[in-house]
Length: 368
Image (cartoon, rainbow, N blue to C red):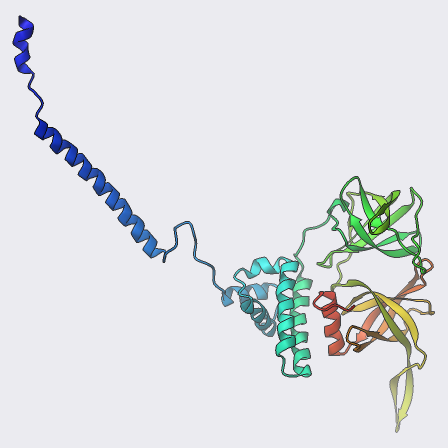
């Protein structure tokens, strides 16, 4: 009875009010969706059609480049050349390029080829080449390309090196630095016959990286083997690589035939005065250049060469063009049965020859 009486206090639901409530919620949700779409549209238009996660591409900055050029010791003329190299290739991050020698040489080689194709005359081309290489060598001298090598496991494959045992030194090539031992091609005598060093032989291996940093380490022959490139020797790895004095200019290992003549200094009378004149001997001797830079070269020869002597050196590259330079022998040493190795410092190098040497060293030009 009491329950029936209380029923009158519970009112029935009003269908009209429920419909109004649902319509209100729908309008509210639709409004939120429209607002979000408008915001996205505004953001897209401000980004010029790019999403917020896609930054605008960087542009070439001359100010950044000139500031960076100054930190490498480049003068105004050299900085202009660097701008020419980078602007033509649309380089937007010059700091990254200049810290990577391989990437830097890629751009410089393109500039070298452009100069070769667009120069008005031979003289104009050689002048531009000389300025281009002055920039490249200044950057090279500034260093900072690669970290220090502390272990022989960091040695790159196909790197040229010199292996020394006792008083004999031989040019070799690193085959692989992976695994338990360092694999190096067997040195060869003058006849090209591999020299198989006995197991346990104490040796020293020296090499220069592409950034002209030199290293050497002491090791011993751990064994002999063969590879698809020929016989190899296995050297025990070392974590005590010693840094050598950094060379001023980059060198390139090569095998390039040359001729040289001895140069003597004579006094000649010119009226009442006596003048010194350099006289080139008529006899020419054959040799082979094993490494070269714009500062000098090493020549292997069977001729007798003494330290202090002056030489006129001639070599021929592809195309049949002969280049010549005047040098002085700093020191000599025997290299097994190959003959005498004369280490020569250049005294006078014509501009065209200097450009050719630079192009070979930086591998913008193939001397074969």
